[in-house]
Image (cartoon, rainbow, N blue to C red; front, side, top):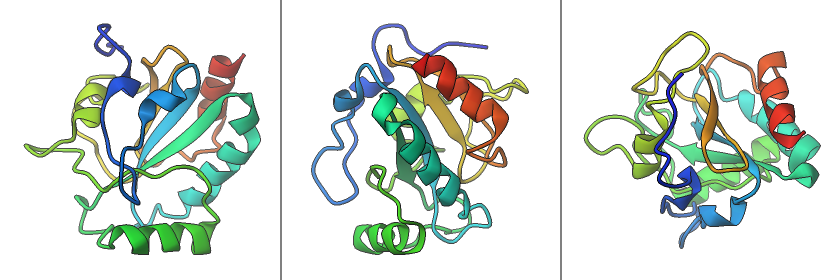
Length: 168
């Protein structure tokens, strides 16, 4: 597996919050963060349930999920910030933070994803995000420690083991 840029933490990257202002990723320094590109109208959208369960289970131990809305995959996140927030809250009871809607691939790829995509998953995939709900686990040191495919359920054994290793 490759590693991220050792010149700093992924959490040093600037990104806006869903409801405006900065998402202030620096506030998660010393915590483990699962960064997930999310969408409201995707076949994988029910993964919000598992993501929220991870948030509830591990938040007190220094962990958070960070949802990053993206509309690059068949237009499956078309909503405004307000619509996305309402959908996540009302439909899935999401309490974890959400960033502004960004592009994760292509020329408009957000700087956060520039820092993530070179990390390989267990199958050796690096590069472009394949679909909604691709997951990156950031360790307490702000470096990428794991990458999971979109189809990997949030509460799968491999995701839970990776989170618990970071929190242990």
